[in-house]
Image (cartoon, rainbow, N blue to C red; front, side):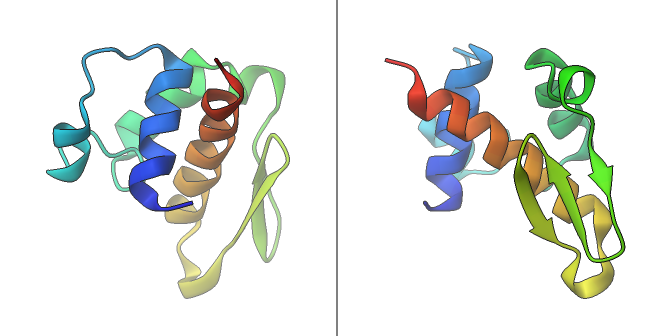
Length: 94
């Protein structure tokens, strides 16, 4: 799944109707790079409340979505795991 698809599905899961494909393409809504947007997404979908983020030595896990801490950037790995978890929820919605 591309980053754009991840973001589109994540927005759908969160019921964020004001996020358009154009906003994603221009980086105006990007929880993959924006800590605040990732946090809002996590809280809105209760990913941090029901499924706590666990940071290990080599990876981070959010609701079963594990990301490597490659390049020693736990924030980027956590944002990506949050978006992947949200995208899975959005993708399963009809």
